[in-house]
Length: 358
Image (cartoon, rainbow, N blue to C red; front, side, top):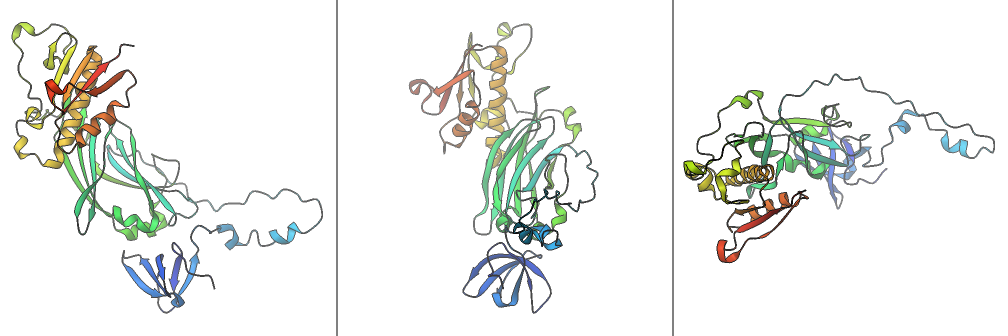
């Protein structure tokens, strides 16, 4: 009898049911069953159905049972025909609705309920979206797992998880902030909670053909992004910049960065939340950085389009998270350089961006 190992799919001898082994210790194995619970079972009461990482579906069907014997025959051996796969029914793949999707892609497409799973967040919309994804811990509550900025059509890899550890993604909170680059509308931040039972990942039929990947995947929509949002009215108080005197207003195309220009070719943008939102006292702390990052990106793109030479972004000190996210975004641009702004003028909470003409 095969030794029980982590990741094996097993069934019980003394009762009905099956599950995935998550740990083995001194004659006992912990088995994750379909209800999402882990139960201790004596290894003597288990029989392996599918060993982790060693399953060959063709061996079970008997196609290759004579393969080893044929190797010993000293004669001209014709090439073996390609094994005939038992194809699944072709599924009709509907065009997905606009939204934010969690997509779970098993790395081993032959053993969908074992091995590692790649996990992606996909922005299937026409908007630019700043996000923060949080996972839940029974002791700590929600904690930040990933923060970033998704362009339209972007996929962000949240990580890779062992199949028997996928339960960490069972309870999720996604905070998102949409920006319409076509008309400059910045929409109110949204929070979406989702719960996915770990037992769902024990069923192969959740992994289906989809519009996002060539591989079979479990696709879960975590947030709706209705197309009607394109006509929505921007939230009041999003941009709280000081009004410029009438004589300084230039004719021609208007740029968002115009209101922050302090001298020709140079602008200063204060990203403190109280400068961006009049209702900042009612905004949740976890939403603030999403708003600040989205506005930073808008101003940066506006400065590039305007052809400015230099922009200083005043982000403050805090825990340094906002500065890090800003620098990560700036590192994606080839035609600019950035450094800490003058300490004498701005203190230690500002970044100077120099735009290089092409």
